[in-house]
Length: 309
Ligand code: NDP
Image 1 (cartoon, rainbow, N blue to C red):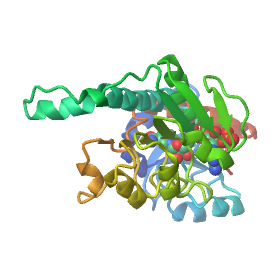
Image 2 (cartoon, helix red, strand yellow):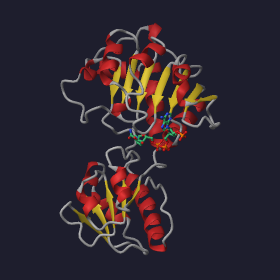
Image 3 (cartoon, rainbow, N blue to C red):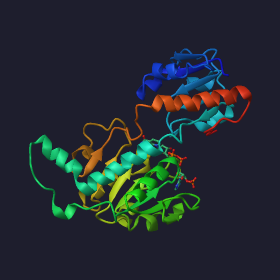
């Protein structure tokens, strides 16, 4: 086992580091301490939320991200220094899948509208034209990894027609048609909902902008649980203002927290969630299972699970 594993205090952005430390404190326990950036001496491995350049200068062999997305980590520099980076993909299919199912049900059944009415003690039906069932409706899921598969399985169970996009268009359970990235417009053209579930990379930055909003139905709803910069946010605001899009549910943004003066707060048909699509009370426990197994592998000289570089 790794004897010297640090939990960086940035993990506190997602859950208290002490909860993870307690989870890791079992019979085969690793020697865990909660550390700040100035306190990395003697550590073999570090569990962290955020990247810090100090990690590259320390004597670390392994850095684990408590998020699936590692777009803020300079992966080339880690690789050049021989530091293995692992991420937390594989944990979020159910949580994010249910969040996206919730977004779609809210738009179909107008639940966000009724909640807003309730705040004003207002008893009023939504416009009948705006109410529908997700049963018989359609979703295009862009990215079919852990998140995308979690979304597709729930959409299929709700009776929806499911289209998907991935780099390698191999068949995926619960997805009726899988398109390669080059057929994005074709994949999103007929969908009532377009759900984004790709990592943020050079290829996916601004993947959805003016041309994609033009390709989508005017009554379509965009769902973004990937990363903010996957969408051109000003093009999104324009599309909402110009009724080229019926609404959006957004968990991630170009700038987080979403600034108070962002126009996205003010649309009736935009649901804003605070990068919380994957939040669950058992998240530290799930991270601990990943970290414990990888600590064992590191000690045994085996390849780590969820290796990014
Ligand atoms: P996975 O690695 O399991 O899946 C990524 C999927 O995206 C794969 O299907 C991959 O295609 C596809 N993909 C990658 N690049 C492209 C591209 N250029 N065009 C089309 N498809 C592409 O990742 P996860 O599902 O675990 O997570 C995805 C991202 O979601 C994370 O990187 C993170 O940024 C975000 N996320 C957000 C959360 C939240 O709280 N909102 C929680 C967890 C993740 P292929 O299968 O062909 O390789």
